[in-house]
Image (cartoon, rainbow, N blue to C red):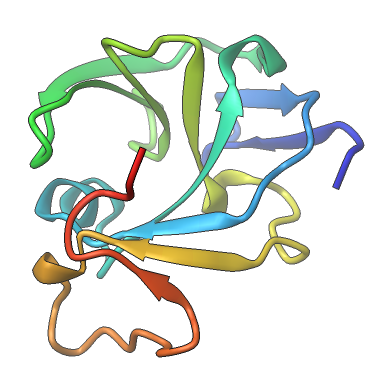
Length: 138
């Protein structure tokens, strides 16, 4: 996928565009990602921060210390609450985009599950997909 990708929040107050190829999806099963997504896992795509442009609105931000110990800035819509993306405090040049906020996420493929030690027992983890008990190796 190498064209411009667009997405936004549920209510449409926040819109964005991404001008970078989208890599595969990584599902994170840590307790913080489960809470922020409201689901059994958060499905994420890493992109260069320079490739992300907010085209409408301004997201709010919540500073969080993740299960990994990393300090994260989690960006969301202050109107509808949609979680949009996050950035590690120590790695602001990368943004972790919530795949479900893309207008067309269908072409993406799940490549990895991380923090599977925290996965809920009712979450199906495909044995053919790479998994890591904690964070993925650097």
